[in-house]
Image (cartoon, rainbow, N blue to C red; front, top):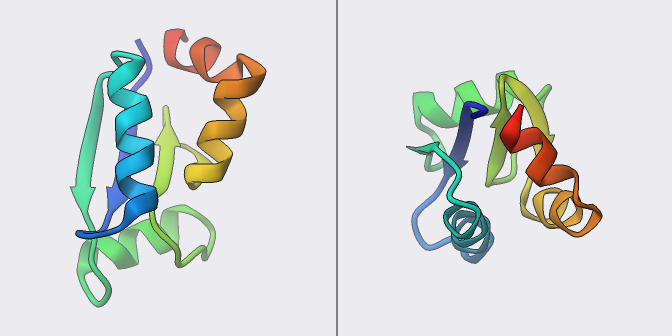
Length: 85
């Protein structure tokens, strides 16, 4: 199964939506708390190529984007393929 990391921020509805989808897919993921101004948030920005929004989601080290991107991958059927790789 793929390695999934998701950088989140407390109170973020998009983060919660993304987490719910990953849980529904039984994905093995690591949630990283990354509020503004923290080293974790800076790490997410660096890894994502400068994107400052949350969530930032990575599958096997590849930045796939945020919640809308994750939902789009799910709708197209690509998310399951990525998670199984």
